[in-house]
Length: 360
Image (cartoon, rainbow, N blue to C red; front, top):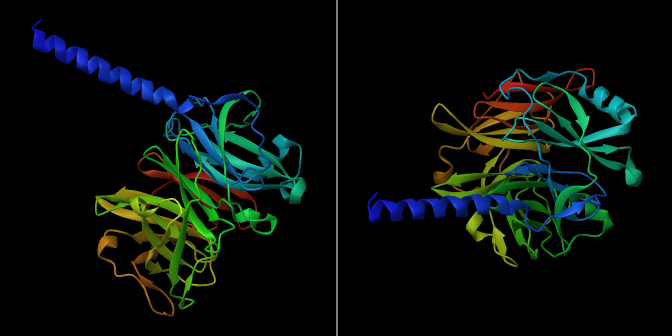
């Protein structure tokens, strides 16, 4: 072997070792024990099966190493009917005695994790339920797990505490957290380095709400996704009533105030529930579930050329969309591989079903 090839092999070996070391670092600094969750709200996954959970009651973001392993094939036609009844039976309660707060799919295994409140009001207990790709349910035990946490320093008082964390996403070693603070500009986006280090005050965000015809600084982002616009990552944020706004990720600096660009108004008297971004047939789309306007498939191909909405409008405006007629009652959704999504659907009788669908 020549010296040049030998040197190259040594360099490549070192690079692989560094990459493996960096991958292993996601659990570095975590403590083994029971996370002191007061509630289990918004959730998403970081790599290596690390579940990120927003504890709204405790104004804290938790990272939990699940050690999740695949069960069966992630391509199975998952369909769990009467999910709420099955979770209630698992937890020894009635369906009316629990609330499913969020759904997160582990992209490495295809297993779903649900954040659940057992009971109602301040006495509700946080529970995490795992549904594997075969449809088998089980409570994920929180005892003696590796975990870390990031307390939110400027959380609102108890009156607004339920909105301290409304949604969160992991992207490129960062956790993007939406919610409210106790600042004058209450609506905030926080960018947390992961593994967690110090948590800053976040970025105060302002939007123009076309349906209301005014600037707003106190309305929280309800759901968000991260999407490349012109080659740069942007936060796409949906608000109640329903403006869709983009914020360049690079603009979200600690302690600053940023005004987003309203790229669509999708109709008032509506609350966005959950969203994902995906690519199909070479085109990029946003799939947005809503409380009263069904599931919208928003074409974001021209988002970088879309003029910001800056005056009062009636109805809808901005990016074009279609309402997916066969998707009704969708409460939560997350990507399940490249071509599918996992959706939590409320049936006509009021029960909840979990099913895998093809992305429209």
